[in-house]
Each structure stands twice: as structure tokens, then as C-alpha cells.
Image (tube, rainbow, N blue to C red; front, side):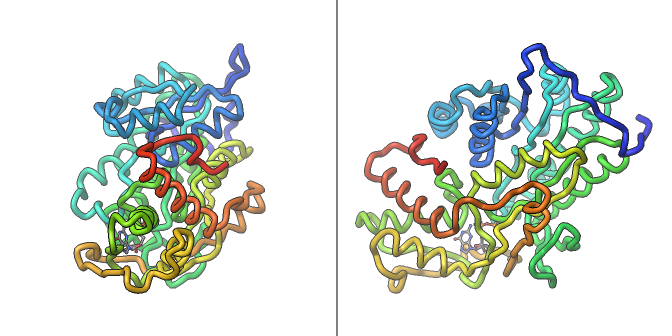
Length: 356
Ligand code: GDP
């Protein structure tokens, strides 16, 4: 594998139909669903991977049925190097969005090795395989790697930019930092078209229940319906830059349409305290304020936490023409509405739950 100059052209062969193929790993996750639907709306042939064994799990089945009509589904473990090589060679996609992975910061301490393999080593193997593919075919698919604001950890720079140094504070953040630097290196060393988007927290009704926004909207909906009487949280003294997942999917796609691959921060540019999520959620459920409903439990505290993160999205705005279309308040209010509807109807997944 001889390094080539990063400026080598990477022509992508045209298909007879002119239809482009996108491979989305982890397509049943929150980001996978929003991105796959966006790509379908743009006319792509979309192939998505599922973790082997998850296809018939009720949660995946529900999601696939409700949201992924038109997406071709393939079973693939992120850590399966040979399986990845076979999918790549068989499909020869124009674009790859690597959205599969271990996404929970809180749970990453208890599963550090799996996190390192899934979020770190698996990306290294994918990139190696892309170099081998390029050597065989003379071109290679464009590759998007979702990096994480958590990589910045305790940063003395607010807001963070594309040039802010990393100081990861969890096994999750360390694995994302490893994959981020490799993705940049394989671009610089081998001339692959690889782009990273450092994504700040992005939420939607499809967010997993272990994340703090969804935990709050679900609990608040249950309180409003008289099925619970408190929200139990860990560290209340944190701030995050929370946006809407559907907007972040649009940014991912735009990054792979550039003439030259680059790295971007994807954020709203505003950080808010956790209390703001509580305020909006309780008001949306018609409960007034969270006073009297909140309990802190050390069980939800982390061995190390990240106090405040806020991203500077200037480069994304200027070079991708990207700005968020949904406000923080709109996404939290919508999540409360959807969680209330879920509890009332028993329907966990519906296209009506997605914001446009
Ligand atoms: P993260 O930013 O990717 O870790 O997203 P999360 O939604 O999991 O957590 C955001 C912040 O909320 C972190 O600083 C957590 O420590 C804090 N937090 C406080 N209570 C909770 C809780 O009960 N669950 C979770 N997941 N986070 C909590």
C-alpha cells in the first residue's frame, strides 16, 4: 500500500442508472434512520447494516418497519473485518456513513474493551480495507466518520473549533478520538476521501432511553399521565450544546459532496444547562416547573464527567451552507409530545413521530 499524495483525484465510476449507492452502518439507530431517510429522499440506493441477531428483535423490527422502507438491510458486526471487506467489494458503494458503534458515554466504563473494538479498531480496519479497495479498483468510496464533542472533554477553549485539542474523559471519548485521528491520517497518508463531523449532542424521539434528554421526556410524560412521580438523575451541574438529529444527518451528507474532504464541527453554537431541558419538558407536559419532582441518585453519576461543551459551527455554516432548522425548545417539546403519544397508544414507532 504505497502512500499517494492527498491531491490525487478519486473519480467515482458512474452507474448505468446514475443512481448513487450509500452504505449506512448502524442504520437502525437514531442517526441511521434520519440519514437513510434523507438519502432516500435524494434518490440514493441505500443499504444499511444491522448488528447480527438484532434483525428480529422487536425494537429493530419496529424501527425497520416504521422508518426504513426502501432501505436494503444487511447483517454485519462492526468488528467483523472479513464481513466488512465482503460487503464493500460486493456493494462498491459511492459513499459510506459509519454510524454503527457504541454510543453511550455513561455505559462505556463498564464495557471499555467492546467500546475500543467497536468504535476504534473497527474503524482502523475499515480504513485499511478502503486503501486495499482503492489499490484494486483505482477509486474508493467516500467515507464519513461521526466524531464526538466528548473528545474535547475538559476543554479550556469555549466554544470548541475544528482545531481544539482533545482531552477525552471516558472510554467512549478515547475511542472516538482514536478513530477521529485515524480517519484524518488515512486521508493525509493515503489520499482517501474521508471526512469527520464532530457532532455535538443531537436528540430526537428516536434517542435511546439511556440519554438524559430522552430519560427526562419519557419520565415527564409518565408523570403527566400519573404513572410516576419523579425524575431521577445524576449530575445536574452540566451544560451541553443540544441540537436536532435530523439536522445533523443533513450535515453528514453535505460533507461527502465537497470537492475536498475536510473536518467539521456540527453544533448549534449554544450550550444550555441541564435545568433548561427540565424546564422545557415540564412546561410542555403542562406540569409547570420541575420543583418537587426531581431526585438525584449517585448511581447515575460517572467516574469522570464533562461539565460544559459548546461547538463553533462557523465552518459548517460557511462551507456546507448548514444551519440548524429546529430549535432546542422545539426538539424537547416534540420529544415530550411523542413520549406522551407512545404511552397513550402503545405505538413505539411511527413516521408521525419524526420531525421533518
Ligand atoms: P453525553 O453528553 O453523550 O454523555 O449524553 P447524555 O445525554 O448521556 O449525558 C449528558 C449529561 O447529562 C452528562 O454530563 C451526564 O452526566 C448528565 N446526566 C445527569 N443525569 C443523567 C442521567 O440520569 N442519565 C444520563 N445519561 N446523563 C445524565
